[in-house]
Length: 102
Image (cartoon, rainbow, N blue to C red; front, side, top):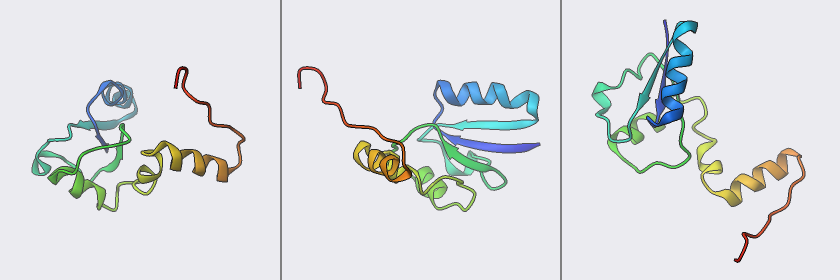
């Protein structure tokens, strides 16, 4: 059975776990404060359901793991300005819109 560890154990992680079961994929939503020893990430693909996370023993361990398939993207998408710059560089047109009343 393939395994995927997802940093963040919110609703999306739980939905992915449920969706993975019939496909033969074990999805492990992992809370930010989880003990790294209790997370089965050695044989897993790693991703995240959240854009920002605090630095903990677990996040340090997962962030440098070679199976964290999209780790280079998270520093870009965590900040809306760098996220929009990356989208602009990729090609689609958009423009910033000020919030109402601000």
